[in-house]
Picture 1: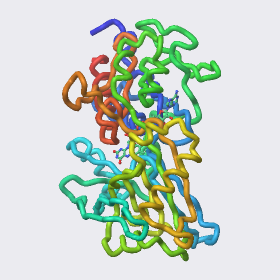
Picture 2: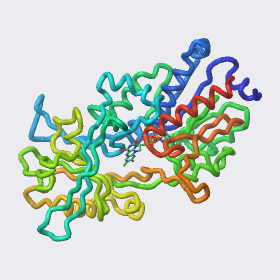
Picture 3: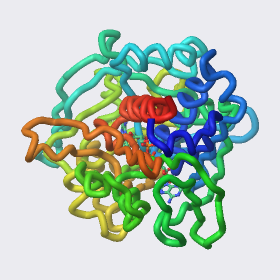
Picture 4: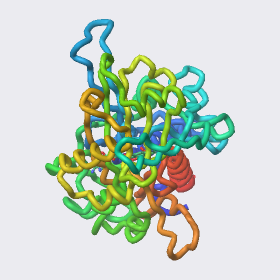
Length: 396
Ligand SMILES: Cc1cc2nc3c(=O)[nH]c(=O)nc-3n(C[C@H](O)[C@H](O)[C@H](O)COP(=O)(O)OP(=O)(O)OC[C@H]3O[C@@H](n4cnc5c(N)ncnc54)[C@H](O)[C@@H]3O)c2cc1C
């Protein structure tokens, strides 16, 4: 046992700061609370004190946008809704399956048995695109969605936390900016105006890796060089909506006949297309479609004016879906994700290998996030598990 673990705990539960209120932050707080609530740790749990600092107003890349239709009101109010970040997630490991099971029982999480096709834009103006059946997502490897919105699960996780407070709209300043944090001492965090956010035994950073590198720069973080090893790629998301009375383009009307929910797009800047109003428990929505652009296309256009990007992606969507003046969407929106997908650098390793969480035991700092794994929601859970293991190991 090292000196600092004695100092950190004084036989009590530590005071922990989590930077980032995305799923990694929320799942880490949840698993820490559960770990300290075991019989063995019961005495310590009384003192467990976790604070999540989140710079935005809501929870991370689990994102839902909705617009209300101005033509409808009261109980008949209708909405368009787009899950413009993660669309669904997998639960391949038994521990994650077990973790999500209570929400599957309540119906907050539901399997999505989507029918999947590939679409290739038509070569000729007058032709419809070529649609080919690909897959039906079944029960062998289910994909789950959160209802009634993709953000609902994040909110539910936050609501169940009992020893954690969440401070939204609080941007933590780079650790080296205001003071040096010596080894074996508590870490004092500051916000960007220089106000102290308190002193902590452990600091867990869950920001995307570009932001984590800035937060930890020049702080003496022992694993700094590893933070930028995984490559995070951008993604633009296009959100389209049609009014009830409006005719849908023929491609989407014939979609009802072919009955597909998800399309992988060939030969286009567009990559994946999701029909929101056909998801389970989403059927009261007005016609809403979310389209993720390709990561390589998004990277190449990442600093372009968003209106230019929106126009270009709308043109590609029109070319694919073939709408005319009558059947054009009434709603068009576009969002830029600078950090969307994780590409693990395989040059040296020869295979796709996740780096795992980055632990600096002498400062009691951990850098975590989906990008330490495979860059998806299941990785957030795995990194939360690794973090709890690392902290409890030091405390023992
Ligand atoms: C377009 C898109 C599509 C996706 N599709 C899927 C999918 O289909 N399936 C799937 O499993 N996953 C998908 N993902 C990935 C999934 O969304 C992520 O794996 C997951 O949401 C990451 O959570 P996180 O907590 O690690 O990171 P984030 O959600 O990025 O959370 C990090 C948080 O840190 C905050 N932060 C950063 N710096 C500071 C600071 N200085 N102070 C305070 N707060 C700070 C940020 O505001 C952010 O909220 C998709 C992601 C995108 C963008």
